[in-house]
Length: 398
Image (cartoon, rainbow, N blue to C red; front, side, top):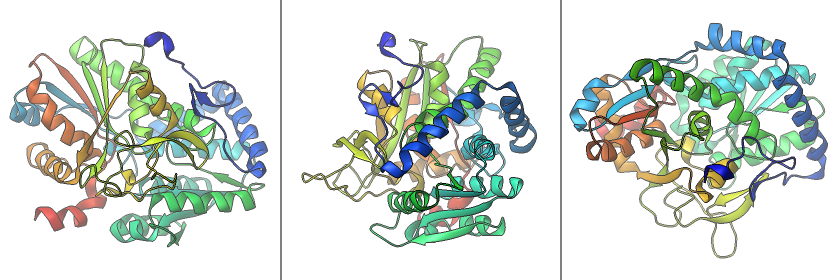
């Protein structure tokens, strides 16, 4: 298994059979230019120094690795640590990637930024960095998501972003990506698309992963300092997969570290009522990449459902598809009911409101931790805070 691991995709952007560049011809040259620019930036100490300074002094890195003592005690099994990405500026891990990509956009001479967003956290992060660097910002967001994430819509607008409602189809994340890609095709000469997850055409899955690796790099050093050894289990929610791959990647070659990604089980694994791609999904191409996705017998993309806007998406990032195919990472799911229970438990035991996306990882840990020895160590990526979800969660929990 470990011998199959690749640290970067191949020259055509493939992780094994997954990934690639499935885009209109208009975008091939800009994507190739972006790949070249990223490779140069990655190896430029000045670029990395500027990014590191922003991550530290603007975003608030490093984030703490917090021992959830009361929650661990309640569950009565493994010792649980939370990687507190929720404490970053803007309230989620998304700022890591947004900062990296805005610096790339500057290098490429772009003056206009577009992005898609589901739960709104990537949109907020993108609006934030555009305000910081004085660039025009257009955010595409499904009309359904705008209603359930109205707080984040207001935050984006307050920072000067134009939020464009998308009413086509299911009016959620997939449709927002479609609209962003249409914009990019028409304006690529002066526009950079800050894609929000480890999805899409090469080089985005690799690039987004690299900008989020800081989470796992920090967590590795922190757990060694606190416990003197590596964790037994890493857990993260998985939509497109940016927060999960950021935590997992620095540990991939550590054979004794188990990793679990938790998808959106929605109302259960019933067609069009969930977003768990490895549960009844199939191999296909969507929005620039070859990966596992939810489609019907005719190959049409199925509707999805999740209580969390950020996981309500029909495809998964290609590196996750690869890691599942070689057996390095396990993927499971949590239902909406389990997610709400996890949200409430973490709030009442630790005084921490997790994002509903993050609460999928919490829900899995609620089930697995009591079954593990008390000597076991778990790290959960607390990828975002739940301020944005208070109104929605309150409808079910209060």
